[in-house]
Amino acid sequence: MNHRMFLAALVLSAPAAGFVASGCGDDEELKAADAGTFEGGTVPEAGPSPGGDGGDAATPSKCGSAAGSPQRLLLTMNNATTSEVAAFNLADKKVDGRFTFGGGLGQTSSLGSDPYVVEQKNDVVARMDAKKPWEPLATWSVLGDDKADGGDPNAQPIAVVVPDCDKGYVLRFNRNKIAVIDTNKVADGGLAETYLDLSSLVQPGDNDGLVDMTAAHYVPTKKRIYVLLGNYDRTSVGPPNYELACKSTKASIVAIDTTTGQLVNLGGTAPGGGIALENYNPVVGTPMAYDAARDRLLVFQGGCTADTVGAPFVISKRAVEEVDLATGQVKTLVHLDDKGFPGSFVFVDGNRAALSFFFPNQAFFWDPSKPTLGAEIPGALDYVAHDGKGNIVGGRRRSVDGGAVIDLLSVPFAAGDAGVDAATVQTLGQDPFTTNSGYLGGAEVWPRP
Image 1 (cartoon, rainbow, N blue to C red):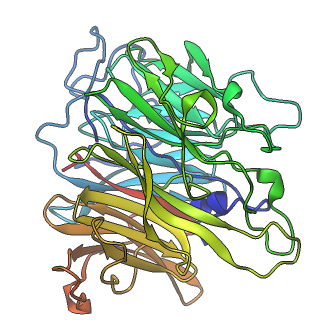
Image 2: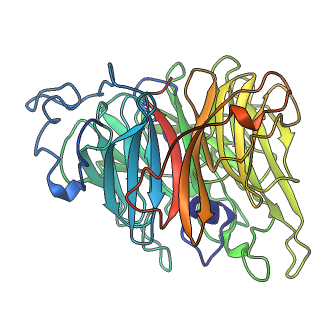
């Protein structure tokens, strides 16, 4: 069972995890001994490490450059009290480096010009070296002082959006304010410069009082960060099913104008002019994809069950839907009520995508121009990414003889709706972590294809 899945299902007895991120100026990225932890002294007091981001210790960090770096699969393992990132070289099929941090929740962000790690239990955001993504260059504490009475003790950062290499917007799942950090400062444990308050967007009937920030994406042509708000009522989770109940609240898309740092009205029916979505329960940690060719956002929703104690376990509103950013129109693309709980989602282009599910563990190719899923991926994958060469890559956890094995796999995209022969599934490696006692928290390819 996966930590991120626990969060998305909002099972109260389980931990939370997962994030999505986007970064510097792009819509969308180790032959060394293990670097160890941040506390181990890998971070300079000022400026990026020499040879690290290609910078000079006396100059501002700005955006890093991964030019010349081999393509690596960044995988995260969340254990009981620690987490670990492994950078697996897709060319020579070896682990180039690892980064360990405290707390059993966290994941990487590799969607921009710099990779980040979000230490969710610690309320820490770490910027990693673009060429050696197991080496941290700077950290920020984003706990803040805005915990509501009776609220969760940790703010749980889930996403870092860096639109211009100087300012990072950090989404925090357990708070209503976005922390804004100066990513051009390199320090150990820096603080947020300011906060952007979204509390006015809490919807009537949302009894937990949180907007539930779940994902974000920066679109540079519009100079806007689009933020996905779950707006689900966490207080609706209870026995016997411990599933999120369908409520009257609506998930919504809101936007931040990066030239002003303020929210903009998108002309929708949700609070603040946000665009209300059709389905329910956007999954924390499952990417919200941007299709630049069609100027649309794609949102993977986990669904909900009847708001009746003891009611039969019937899921509805589990789907992928699109938001047309030019018109604000919303449309469900594929209904998924008959599938397991969402695991991960990777979008390549208008005809190629892949999704994974839990309970049962399954993964499928999907042509986003069609209303049904495509071929099932043999053996499934917990988390999926793509290598830009026509392959899905990712990780899978298997229980073996009382222990666990982590498989790293590559699967070519199926032609059309054709099935996938199990013989095409290539095992790239196994067990990239120092321990397999926990659960996979994510998989991403860096540099991005």
